[in-house]
Length: 250
Length: 252
Image (cartoon, each protein chain N blue to C red):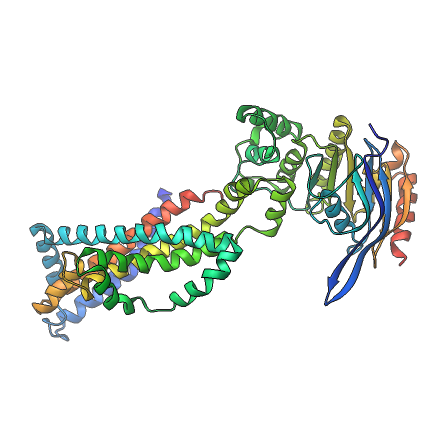
């Protein structure tokens, strides 16, 4: 396997607003190694969500190089999955059917799909809710189903676009640790985009600090494993202060 | 469910009972010409008589059959047309403006032409009823076909749905609530048009001809019987439609 899973080189992106180009990302360069968890933190409007949309392939126009496993990204692909801030489950499908929707393009038979979908519901602790409709699930449970749906096609890279932003503090803390466990267990690469500095510190092997107008990388901080990532430790507090200071500059 | 039933029945029947009392009061006080505005007892006696003689059930069944035939025809045309208008941008641009103009035409304007085109028999009436149902069913299916939110549209892209999967798993289910709403309005319109067809087009068995014979015989009790049966049947149709619709979109 290549030492780089995701390769971003000099990536720039502009939208046209009122006839004039408005740069949203400028000169982003970042490599993500296999099995690495990268946090991207920045104020709203720094282009961090646009970055994820480019990586997942929802948007394709850009300058610079964007490649996964050595192949340029030109649209959505099985190997790159995303979880959005809203769960985006199909309200007319049950939890297990929603997870099966993640296998839309697989050649597996019907019963095999069902089996794998149930396995992934178990992975996020929702075995008992396979037949529930999204409206019957709490926000945290719905987001777990969305995570199962993202993982069911066995992607190599999991993209998380403020996935816990709409959840209460306790649920958020549970889900953060659970996602971390799953990502490690499955050997995935992951990128989480967030404006929550503690979350970025907790999850990231590296924290990428972005600044807006146009979106660019201000600093990349490598984190050690261990207690330094736990909110409240002196190391984490110092790191938090450093990141907040960075975010305050513009 | 059962606990709430009694208060609900009471709430729904309060106004009708009050109107009935007012009706009884006004006629008993002799404020009306009883030939033009007969008393409740007269009307109910007439209803009972017409029911037992078989005239009323026969008329009701004939009207219902006509109504449902027209409704089915309108739905069979309206749902596919509305969905295609919404799903295919070029078809929407090509046909949408024409349909929008068509729906502005008052339904009764078609009566002379339909009579000419489809003869004076049953088919002209059914086409007329179908047209009445067709318009709201098409309008709603058209809106429904565009109802899939952008967020879910993106989810189908990320999950790499094929165009067929996108239609079957996302666009059509998303359209269902609007389609159901359109069918409900269409069913009401069809029922209104049924009486219109029976009253204004050629004579045929049905509730419309009950009204006509009431008018011709100067039997206002018979006219009121027709009016009441029309209203009650309409409510019954709408209730059934709303129940069936709720089953279809249980996920909402």
